[in-house]
Image 1 (tube, rainbow, N blue to C red):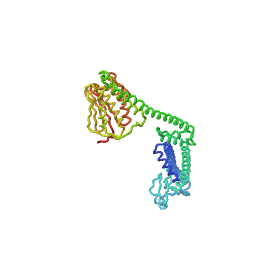
Image 2: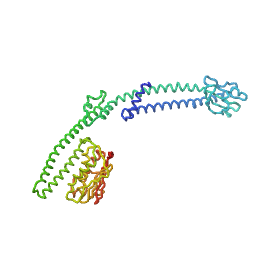
Image 3: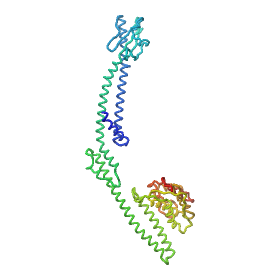
Image 4: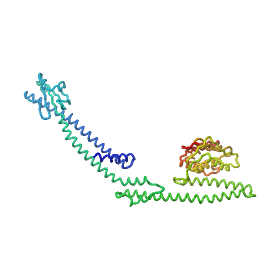
Length: 455
């Protein structure tokens, strides 16, 4: 029986450690079995104590009273002497007839002593002077404790063993039945746990693949999960098609417009108004490219679809700062870079370029004079400007409301998507984003990188 319980215990412990339904069921049955066993043992022990210290003591007290009544009627009455009990009457001059181990016990006391190599229960009694004024002596009633233990064995522990055996067998059978009842749910949980949203195995959740003992509730649950998985597969496929088609169909016309704007700027005799318009077109196309790239990255559920590689952050900063020079054309604003340190990252470099591009575009848009500074620190990238800044109220709403536009945005343009894109990409890649601003002084945006690679 012990050999058969070991595998069960090991499986149960592993299941309990996993926090699975089977483990919780195993723990519940073990706790129930332990509680019943402890309660039964305590009950039998309590019965044994009551039998020894209450019932037998009460019986010895009644036997002593009966002896004193008999002795009062018949001075030649014999002391009690039965199979389980022996009596000793101590009178002056008869000390030798009483075992030495009994000497010194006070009247009315009850003791457990070792007498002649065996344990015994001893009750000491003297006659009641009001009922028997003429009687003398002290009575020792000795009850063999072995008889008490034998009674406890046959009427306590033997029934206990049988009851516990029945409880154990019943619990084991109930556990097997319960485990069989929940096994389809456990199987279904295992299928869901191993479910890959990118490549869902819908055949595993079809009704024909369910266990033979699956009941109606499990079939309904499996059918619902199967339907959800089917819809999820459709959504994933739709996302892939959208990002692929949008990447191609949107970039193609943008490229045409950008080339046309470059050709237009090289046209001789183009008026100043035409040149300004063509420059605005190029700037808008650059913004549109950055937005499309950001939206395509965010549209993908998990995989951004861009290769991860080791790249130097300072090189990305140099490229984006050079591109941002056109954003401040005609304004007394200097876009500069500052390298306190430099480090590398293992990630898609395009993601950092999109984040930095949005921060620079925002900074340049809201700065009319002064500077926009990009600082590369030991483990951070910071964009600081001397622009209009934001109030504390607007700054709090930037992180709470998507596409929020402050009071200055409505005057200077913008769509309210730049900081939202940066925040979402920050959450996606685990790069904490911090924003601080003071109205009329400027804004500081910081991206931190938990695992930089120092150069």
